[in-house]
Image 1: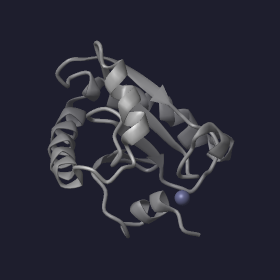
Image 2 (image 1 turned 45 degrees about the horizontal axis):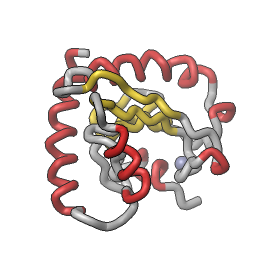
Image 3 (image 1 turned 60 degrees about the vertical axis):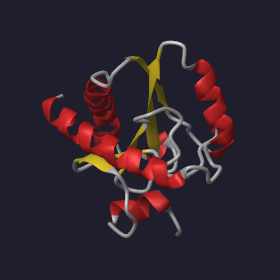
Amino acid sequence: MNCVFCAIADGQLPAHIIHEDEHFLVLLDIFPLRPTHVLIVARGHAPFLADLPSPPREALLALADRVAKALYREPGVLGINLLLNDGPVANQHVPHLHLHLIPRRSGDLIALCWRILTRFLPLGRKRLEARLACEAERLRAALLEA
Ligand SMILES: [Zn+2]
């Protein structure tokens, strides 16, 4: 099976990991819809929420709450979209369970819609990588206190 999140969990692919525990990896989305767009990724391969064993399923919201606390420390963040695309028909691009946390700032809807249309285009990749590295460092520190 060729699963990008399994490869990251196995250490075979790099990622901007900001936290990990026995059930989950928390990492930055490399196609962010907004700055500090975070993914909580199941450590084991589970396509649908119903495939996730109950210990991680029950731990997911508590971890999301902790990550959210760190995201709310980012400048201007006043809300967060928590989004779980359950299955390919629901726009799940990687068939391995992941919860999106998309930080929202006042008046950012147009920028969000623009990113939905352009996020997979290979524009400004180098600059984005540098930004992701900075964001990851900040969020790692914030999560230690969250
Ligand atoms: Zn997988």
